[in-house]
Image (cartoon, rainbow, N blue to C red; front, side):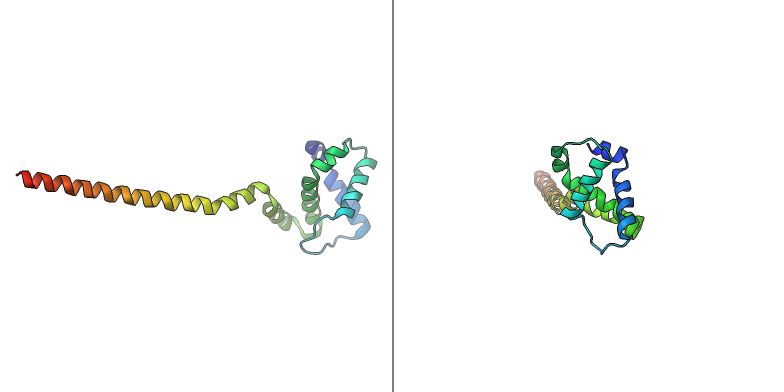
Length: 135
């Protein structure tokens, strides 16, 4: 379904139609609402794009993200659209969410290394002390 949407340029074509009728301005932080999604659904049907209602429902969030990105390109420019894509990318969100855990793991590993180094130094001192006593 997603490949078909991209292959047929459905987001680009819908954005062109939308902005042809409504002008090219959108408010900052704009996102597709239910009315726009209904218009997009109707557009897909009139364009002969084959899909099921289950496809549309299952991929609804992805469709909204793609529509938002495509419409940002026209309304705000490519740089804002790229920024939006990064800010809303689930993989990026997961990576950002993982940073505190990664830092905690790093800090824990550093503590263990220091503890082991200290234990090794104390062990060396003990061995050296025993050797000195034997002499």
